[in-house]
Image (cartoon, rainbow, N blue to C red; front, side):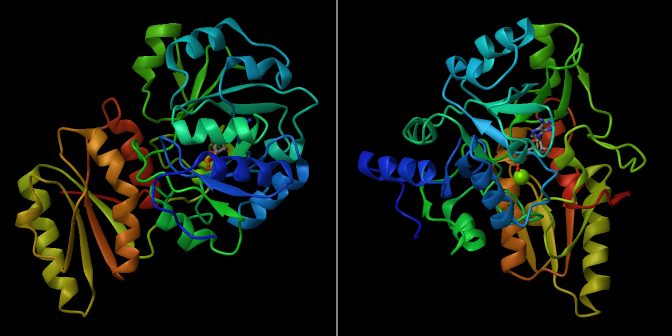
Length: 344
Ligand code: AMP
Ligand code: MG
């Protein structure tokens, strides 16, 4: 298993599909992040996925399909809300939760009677899912607790020796995981924010609720997506988000850099194109453009992993607007920081 060069011959895709059919694991690119795939209808494959990631077995997997026609085989019913969302957003970064039937093993759904289904748009993912028999269970292809991989080299770092193949499709276009919406509830509930926002879904469905644990640190309430309760996306360094007016944020971070640097700490800053030149830290990373949340989404996980490589002890990040796609960005950043925010 070696990362390849971004062009994947049909023969390789067929081989990858055969690995899945035999019960093995293959990591593959999608437009959101890299997935760690196994046969979603084979309980032994799902168990292997949990083992490879070190993932708790109550944290369900998403089944990846290539179109709506795959649904009747695995779900009890397809509500009107699903039909409408599929017509608007599939293929793409939207995961829907429906009632599962007996063909879907509890090993794949973490013991739940519901199943999460997504239909990616990435052409390599689609060819691979078809070659694999049509139902590929896949969480993100990182070791549990690390940032999701947006490039094959990060998958290789985490999964080397634990999977049979890695398909290299280059950098992930979106960079954050899919939006998850539970359609077994009325009104539907967004369990995880992603590229598609609550406003996007409301335009199609009317009223849509959002799980209130998404941006708060309220640990008394369990999130409805089991995976959202785990600390996730965490860099090895101690990450704090600094929020406030830009001037105040820059001066606070520079003062802290001086103070902690004097104690021998290596300091990192997650900055933006607009501010990076003004920081005095050892390691500075441009995570994107403040006015373009898509650029931040695309780069955030790479930056978090780079801080690990460069052994930052303490990391400060600017805060971003929670509007639109910014909600997904702040959700991931808050989780990475264990909800540690300093207001200046
Ligand atoms: P990952 O693929 O690593 O992004 O993780 C999948 C996410 O989907 C986790 O947060 C899971 O908790 C969530 N998920 C998967 N299936 C279900 C389900 N049936 N009900 C609620 N959440 C789910
Ligand atoms: Mg994940």
